Length: 286
Image (cartoon, rainbow, N blue to C red; front, side, top):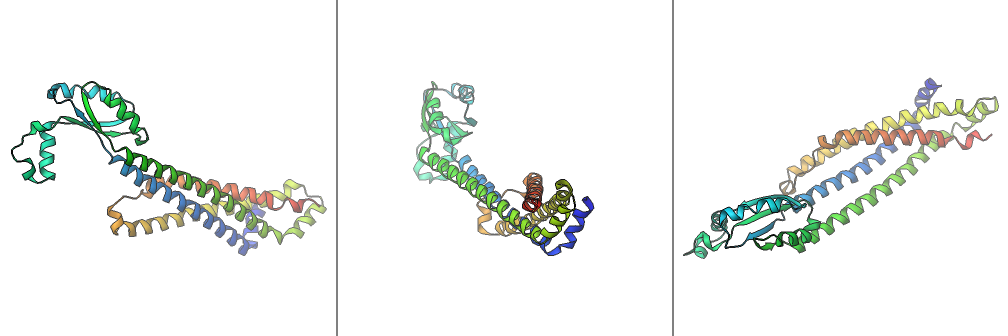
C-alpha cells in the first residue's frame, strides 16, 4: 500500500506536479509576508534603540555623588543600559557638534553630569521617566514621549496587520491546496468505488492517498523553502547594494533558516496528509 502511494505520484504526474507547485506558491507567499514582518519589526526596534532618555543630575552634586546614582537607575526594571556622562564629556560633545563661537568664554561647568539611558520597552517610557524623576539627585529627565508613542503605534499596527495577513494566507492556502488534491483525486473516483465494492476496507483504500499526500507535502515544503531562500538572498543583495541598504540591515536568512525549514515541512506534511484523507472521503461512501 505504501509502494502504491509512491507509484501514484508518477502515474498521475501532471496533477502531482500541480499539487506540489500550489503548495510551493502558497508557502512562498506566507513566508514572504513573515520575512517582511520580521524585517519591519527589526527596523522599528533599531529606531527605538536610538530614542534615548537623558537624566540630568542636580548641579550641586559632585561627580562622585552623581556616579553613585547609577545603582538606583539600574534598579529600575525598564532600564536597558545607563551610561554616565561627565560635564567635561558633555562639553566636548557640544563643541564637536556646534560652532565654537557659541561656547566662547564658557567652560564645562555650565553643563550638568547626566545619564544617557536606553530603555527595554519604549512603550513604558512615560512610567520610567516618572520613576527616574523620583530619584533624589535627578533634577530633570528629557524623554521624547511623542516619538515613543509614534513608534509604539507603528509597531502595534505592523504586528496586527502581519498576523491578519498570515492568518488569511494560511486559510486561503489550506483551501487551495486541499481542493487541488481533491481535483487530483477526482479522476480516480471509479478506481476507489471498485475497490470499495470488492470489499476493500476504508483504511486499505485511504493509506496510499495519505502516503501520496505526505510525499507531495514534503516535496512542496522542501522546494518552497529552497525557492524562498533563493528569492530572499537575491532581494537582500539588491537591497544592500542600494541606498536603502545603508539605512537599515535586513535579517540574515541563516538566523531563521532552521525554524522556517521546520515550519515549511510541517505545513506541507499536515496539508498533504489532511488533503489525502479529505479528498477521498466522499468517494468511500459507496
